[in-house]
Amino acid sequence: MSGRPRLVGINHVALEVDDLDEALEFYGSVFDFELRGRVPGMAFLDMGDQFLALSEGRAQQPDVERHFGLVVDDLELARAALERAGAELLPSRGLDFRDPWGNHVQVVEYGEIQFSKTPGVMRGLGMSSLGKTPEAEAELRDKGLAD
Image (tube, rainbow, N blue to C red; front, side, top):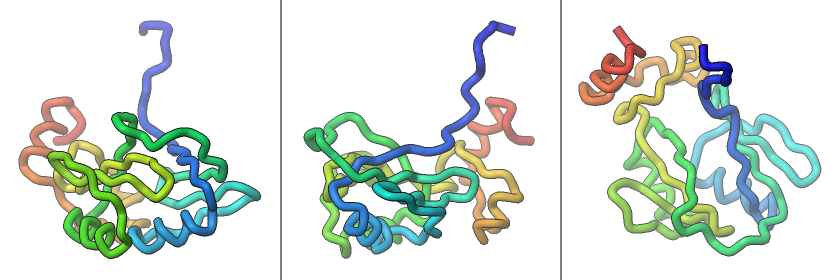
């Protein structure tokens, strides 16, 4: 034991936006999610056992390198939704975009990466049939995270 807590995941990420209603409209036009809750100046988008917080009051310039990643069930469906919403798609190896408030977001597909949800969370999200690519399964096995 090292005397330090081990990182085990991310509970949520908070994004600053100028207008909360506009942000809910934008993200709702791109992604399918349940609104977990809302308080003055903040809204919470449910992602099963995690959530994305939208916070009113963006003050900084658009993000360049700083970003965070979202996981989706279908990357090409996400790309099409972002194009329909008029999002600024960024040059990358995958699918990166900047939202109307300057937040840099990277989108990856669940089956392609080591990130995993428990079977219970997957059932709750209605996505229990999603699988992993052989490469993602190998990465999980190499880390002792899968059979």
